[in-house]
Image 1 (tube, rainbow, N blue to C red):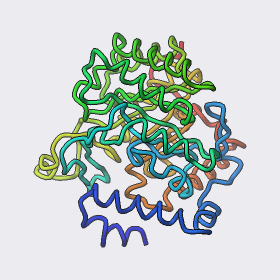
Image 2 (cartoon, one colour):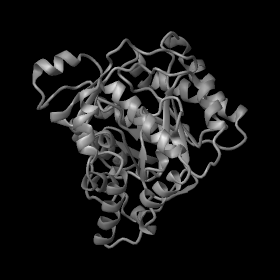
Image 3 (spheres, rainbow, N blue to C red):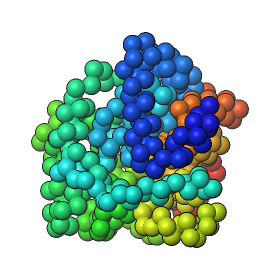
Length: 369
């Protein structure tokens, strides 16, 4: 039914318009009395084998929705009724900004991929914080992803991220420092240790001075990093006491696409997500696991389409999973499909909990230190 709707309606609309329409329908359905309860009862992960402990929370499953879908915290709880175990809102910046000119999102259906150069379009951290504060329930884990305001120079990046952290620290269940989007000029430079160290320090100090509770802090990295740079970030994350790493953001690569070069060129610059990112994101995850072992929570995102993809990430060392493009192409029943498949694979492998399967997938690059 969703495939028919996608082909007949959403695919004929500009990608960003289709996204706004689809998200609006989800929020509308969740607002109808009884519908929210019915959908949650049908779609939520309930199999005890799927339960995961992460960031001091007991989650009903490992699969969450990645940042980018709900940039302004307009409806995290509405998205939660579709079967996601947690939601990440953002990317949010300290100052409101319109993002890049439209069109800025493009589909590559032959590759089951998206290209976006949104540019952190959002209403600002204060607006997102107000919406998160007004949530009726906190049963669903909702994280916030923060980025640099485009107008802020690199020399003031740390204070800009800290400003967002101060606003969101008491209303988000975890915070993610996004230094890996390719759509804000110079942002990926902040992944270098000389920049990342003071940035993480500033954010942590902001959280410690404004939050009434410990807030798990993560960093989200790019798939295009060299292995040595991945190791350097992993070492820094351990040194600074980060709680986890999200691997990975979108890629600037356009290699091995089924879409014709003319159509790819027409879409232009931006981050590529979806199936083509699968193997590179998996490599980065394995590289991180080899470096940090189980000392950090690793969150896998990038190219997850099937239960087999999700299971491979679990075995490669991911405690949690996130998706965006797989959900766009898979539809509203897709989270349920992934969780059901994971539960089956967990039992087939002889585990009583999916958490027991984390990192059991065999040899990985390097040697844990």
